[in-house]
Image 1 (cartoon, rainbow, N blue to C red):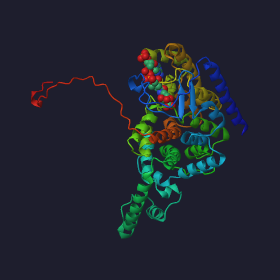
Image 2: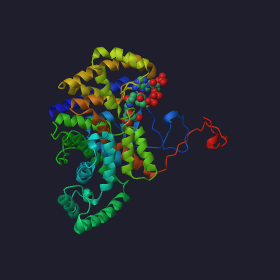
Image 3: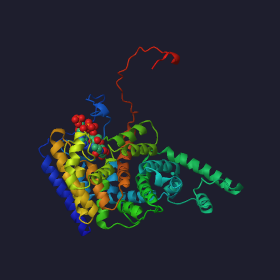
Image 4: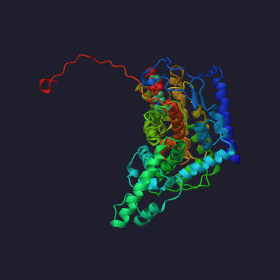
Length: 466
Ligand code: SDX
């Protein structure tokens, strides 16, 4: 392992030691037995406390500040694993053998090659679109384009011919004369058939692999298009994390950047029944397909109360502008009962273990990045102020989004890419939980307490005064 990356592993392990020390007083959780439905639970607004299903995929202990993926604690996975291995673990339930991991990585590499989808995406005004809206559009285009052609990584003659001749998006050009029309019609037929076949198992693991790899390619392509560059095809010799940075920047990252990106991807991969995971599962529970489920996850993640908070944090730190402004800014924010971005959590009433890893990574990176160093100073002062004001009575601590933006900006990544990067990682959790839930599927259909009346009489419009 490259020497500096050993330093990164040490940072993770000391974060683990600190977490264990600070939460050792909290009781250990008991093993839960398989649920005997129906269960009783106290439910608050926003389904707070509601038990939606049983899972073996991930566990969040809010009191102890624990995050577990399939029994492994997040600190160990960050210290010793890789995103590919963690995605496999979430999907299949156990750590892979070397052989299985190699074939899984090969599969992801193959699926990260989505030239037709990118070509389709580029026919939309991506540079003017919200990046998460573009990402969600991309998953629908992936759904359309997921044919054997892309799955096997080769481009069939017909498609190549049309795109080569027309130098535009296959199936998009108007038929020019009999020859093209026949090709387009035939290939459309043939492609429609294969699209239908491929969508038959569109909730299958192949689609999960396609989405985990493809969403990373899409996020990178969207970043490049927004900056006026052509998207890059994946570099098949690189790891998932290195390839993601390469496809964004066009430069192969150094081992430390690769390692840190890998850890960030591991940290964001799954997190219990959060809003975007739940959204994906609700869509899947109607037996819609996994592409549309992941599209719903992307839509939910975009919100600043959820994954969109990482970008909102950087904008907040920019607005505060300096350490000396933190106090007056915070006093005003608290007086207005504003939600401080990057703080608080529905489950964690202790320090988010992910923030425990991200903060030292931000400190490590900001040593060579002035903007990152400035953000970090303001963030640390803000954390202190919020802790004094809110941690004791309201148990408000930094969450995953508070330091992740500083890590990304110290790696030269633009704020509008932060939430798409969150989505790139979380596709593993979304698809794993959809797959798991579909095994004992039941359409989600909670209740709403009706508090209206029952006996209103209909009045014709001419008789209505106000
Ligand atoms: C993510 O669910 C997940 O696991 C999500 C996630 C994942 O990995 O999928 O962990 C990722 O979304 C992290 C959260 C990112 N969002 C933010 O950082 C936005 C700021 N945070 C808040 O909006 C809020 O903390 C939530 C949305 C995260 C949680 O909201 P809840 O559980 O609905 O809490 P609440 O709004 O009911 O607040 C309870 C009290 C309130 O005070 P009172 O009305 O009781 O007086 O705590 C206060 C809130 O005002 N509070 C905050 C606060 N968060 C809660 N006060 C100031 N700043 C905050 N950030």
